Length: 626
Figure 1 (cartoon, rainbow, N blue to C red):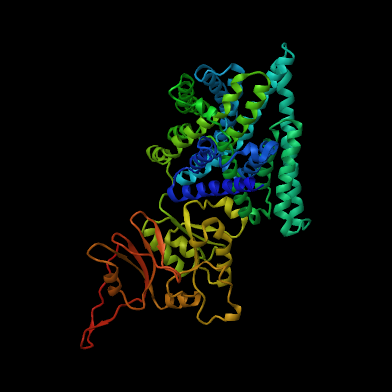
Figure 2: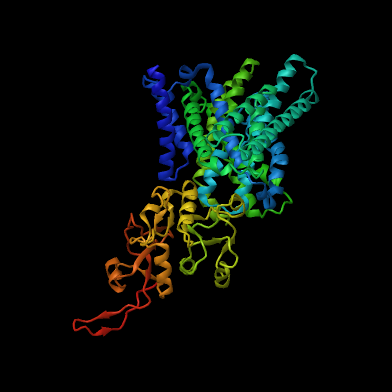
């Protein structure tokens, strides 16, 4: 019992720890998780003490636990798909999910047979599994590289949609070869139509479950505290029910369920976002550690480049990277409106992830039961594909995106909620500093000043769930709530803290005349702008008195102390912009350390009055500006 508890703790520590190291270093998290699993499993076993032994710890429960984890990950991925994204990328996604599936399956099977040396039945099944491109890897990579909207949407949709399709292709191949052993005269017509019908039924189960949830939740049929548990219980139930129809069709059902919920106007969806994201992170971390640690030294021996088999495997991986994937995408997108630079980018990016490893491991056992000895090498080969594609694509995506000119906005931006004279003045200064900005306000009249100044704006309620679909929030790493309603500002900051980060949502401080009894809880508020914590009324009053924003550029000859001397005593530092575009705010709780090359933005009185030793007024010097 203690040994099992230790294993569970080690899985959590290694998985989440690898995610944290990935966040700190920018390395692909999946590579770190696989490395951690290898070290804790086969490597530690060779040293005499296997820290994690999934078979010993979980026994027969290991396979269903991994399958349910994969189902939750695909459901969470489906929840992130907005059908409106298909307005500009739908044709490409459709081509990749139809023509791309057939071409990729055929090319992958040929490569697996002729290069990796797998028996044809095993190669055909593995070629179907290779269709998947791993949304748990693709989405973080796209976020990390800040890719333009269309290629971003195409790769995200392809990754999530093709996961269940790849599993279905593997099921078709397996059922055909199993049926062929029992009835040698069988043909594809005997196998494929029933499986397609079963897949449609599985999809309908997922659709019906999503519509039922979308109907019951808003009508109070489920109390708020039970909504998340009920939702995830239904997801698992749908997965298991669809799998009873045919193995692996549960992946189809939960993906359809997630996409349906995401596009049904489901009002409770926002409230479950933090929990679903946490579950996905824990599931990804745990599954990768389990799968990597379950390998044996014999499995790794297949990947030894010094052996003939190992060399064939790695040549197969190279063919997958430089022949199979590029040809699949370029053939699929022939004649499409997608520009060539975007086609080439999509043709290069195809990292594999959890579904490939999990489904390969499952079918490896079944193929061995059918008498195909090559089935046992599928697990090792799938790990080789995952590691190679994640490293190759993870460490080159930014470079390739720049080279092909598909990079989106790279400088951190600010989402400003509330169109007021102060926020308009701030937006103008930030735009001059080349930081992406967006002003959001539900009042068309209030947005008049932003329109006159030519500033980017969005007319709508920021707390409306439709805004998440209509407004791309990815360029904005900071949010400033600057309406004239302090309570509303707090609500906005609290709502977006989980998405942008608690340390990246800001609002004006509490008013000096505020009643302590009615003060809003500090835990709900965003970081208070300015070290003095100016409130909404104080800022509005100073704005009316003619206070302005001033930019001061620091250098080796003109440091922060000198800059402060040039500004009036009552001036307040708001933020600084690094050379790289990174923004750092002066708040009531933190002061960044300015250095040469930074530009400081301060909020200052309209005039700077100084006196000499005799009290005679001196001309007001202008601060150095960017």
